[in-house]
Structures are given as structure tokens and as C-alpha cells.
Length: 243
Ligand SMILES: [Mn+2]
Image 1 (cartoon, rainbow, N blue to C red):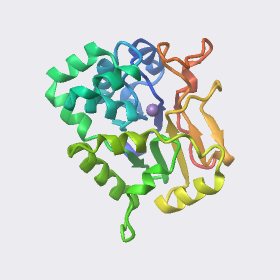
Image 2: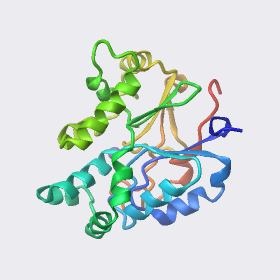
Image 3: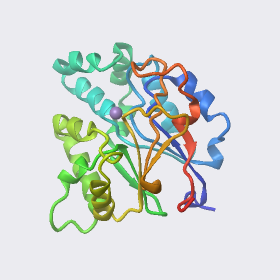
């Protein structure tokens, strides 16, 4: 049995709340799931680097790049960006921790922006087609092209552009035509994302299942945390296609 045969568990924006992450993953043993983290494991809460390491070391996990990881790497490379990053919830002790952990930095640089699953589900940080700006006319595989250019930007001081790209506001909820164009461009049937908290008790599903938001305002330290944010609003199995 390969990793593609495992059921998929999606984890929305953790934002440093490692304690809640332990709790949320308890019903889902790592060996039995392919766990996909949607990015933004860091900032707001006190255990951002801890959450990154935990997600990295979990069996069969994939960790996507969020705008907060980009901002943190940016602050690490360019200390004049530390103020900006702390203004969006950056935790100084986490930056010190990351500075000492070169393998973790390298691993963060290798994160991709988009993941396409065998059932043609596209997984990404924000509910936006902004990533499409990186596609060029004769790219045979737009998903691979975008991931390649994201790596180049991250490696070559392009954090400002990446920050913009990964901070795209959720437009899939309200603009089904743009959603359809994005799905068509990337050869996908549906898209799963986080980044903008929804207020539901389960991941929010739009347009007959073509778009799903798994950011349920998970972290108790995030300004948009709702007292009633249930764990299952951000951490849940991906329903099989057609359910
Ligand atoms: Mn985000």
C-alpha cells in the first residue's frame, strides 16, 4: 500500500497552537493518514517552530507554504523585516530558534505552494487564483511551473512577491467563474485551501464541493479565534470525490 492509498487528512492554519494540534490529531494516527498541512503553522501562538517540526516529522505528511512562513523566512534573511513580521504575529523566540536550526530553514525553503492529489484535488494555502500570475504561456504543467517559480523566488530574495501571492484574499467563495477558470487551468476538479478563517463548525464547502476552506480559526492566539472554534473546523478528513 502506497501513500496514495491512504485517506487524506487536511490541517488548516495552526498558527503556533501546538497544544490544540496534538488534541486535534489524536483521533488520526499518523501512520494511517496522509496528512496535508495548508501552511501558516507559525505566528500568533508561542509554538510556531514546534508546530513546523511536528508537522515535518509526522508520517506521510505534506506541509505547504503559507504567507506567514514566507514572512518569517524574510525576517530571518533581512532583519529590517523583523518589525513587519512581528506586526503580523511573529514570535521573537521562534525566529531565534529557526536561526539556530539550519536544516529546518532548508526544509522550509523546499516547501511547495501547490499540491495536486491523484483524485485531482488541488491543495493550496489561500483561496485565490493569484498563483496563476506565475504561469507562462507555454507551461505544459502549470502546477509544476508555479511550484518551480515559488522556489526560485524564495531562493533569490523574492519574498515580497511571494508574500503578495500567498496572501491572496479568498475569492473562490464569491467568484465561481474565477474558481472554474483556476480549476481548468490547473487540471483540477476541486480546490482545498485555508488562510481566511470561516466561522463554521466544519470545513466550509462552496459551489457543490468545488472549493473547501479548512481554516476554522484554529489558534487560540489568533485575533480571529472564536471561543467556539471546534477542532473539526480546521482538521478533518478530505471527503472522497463526489461525496
Ligand atoms: Mn495565511
